Image 1 (cartoon, rainbow, N blue to C red):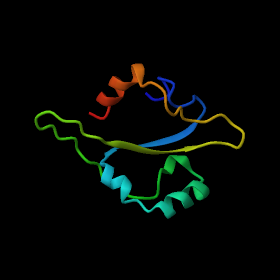
Image 2: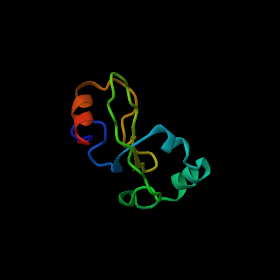
Image 3: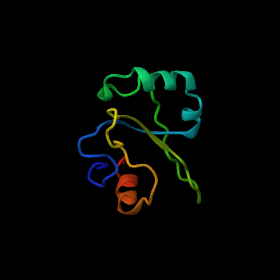
Image 4: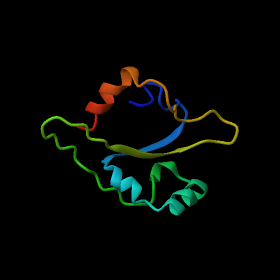
Length: 101
């Protein structure tokens, strides 16, 4: 779906966990390990070498509940970025929100 909407380049090596993570899960990750993984990971399809616990979005009255999708993208030296960052969400927003279920 992300390739279809131009977020991920057609030939990019990308793996997305598929689990919605609570912001506290992201903050709790060791920044030193994250940095080392940026230098040491060789296989995108294996994802990050950490257990990722999904966090359900519970709706109670009106509110906004932030969740993250965590993934890995590899970029060859001198190549274009594999993932489009920033910009307008546009047409991909609603299908992406409905995708996890």
